[in-house]
Image (cartoon, rainbow, N blue to C red; front, side, top):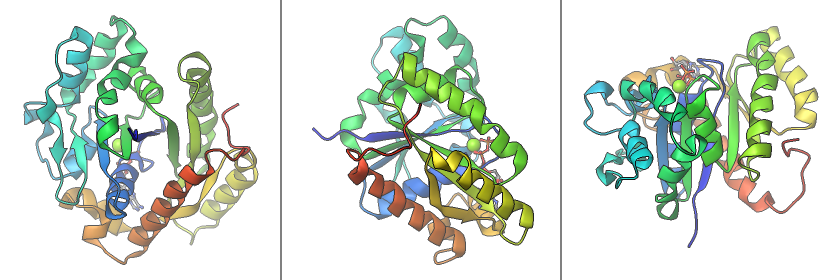
Length: 273
Ligand code: ATP
Ligand code: MG
């Protein structure tokens, strides 16, 4: 049976576009005919809120319940998977997930809990995208253990790109010690404002530096207030500003991400060292 490709969208730096990219890449893949499950792995519940759930803390079931069941070895509550009108399914999160770091600490096989939870969904979807929280803690290690690959959204500024090496170190460690099949699909430049010389200079330095060993997606997500409005509206950019520059950029990213499947057997210099 076909298994979903699991992609973790991660960066320990906050506010770089992880959630926005998870949502829009997910909806974009669904529009391209793929079956998509999005997983909110952040107790802030930003992805859940972006799907129009105004009070995630009042949800009766969330990722915390599914993970708790896996830890206690009891059946997972299937009804915790919700459907969004734009064609993707999602597992919501809320503040309850904030206790999970501590719970995981004492759990048996603590790095593998999310992987175990998602294993039962893999045959129902083509893609499972995990929206990580901005940290390199236990939840993110769980996401990297559950994932086949990683997409790293980053803003083109000095401080954002500086943190990438730390993240690459963590990814590399998980690959060596826990999840040897983990790959890096690429770094995605987000909120790019090409009117500033600084953004262009940082983007070029990234492409000519890290970009020599790792894919930096050709697609760059432009800065636009339209993208920021989406989360308030509870819609994707495709529903909010169809044909706008951010929607076109995410469409282009969908093309790049879908194309990666075909390259799987071609050796590339973008493997994690
Ligand atoms: P966190 O680390 O807190 O989880 P994040 O990395 O998930 O943050 P987002 O929540 O996706 O980042 O984005 C941060 C803010 O930037 C949000 O207010 C979002 O609406 C806004 N934003 C995202 N993409 C764009 C864009 N292309 N142009 C302008 N604003 C954007
Ligand atoms: Mg987020």
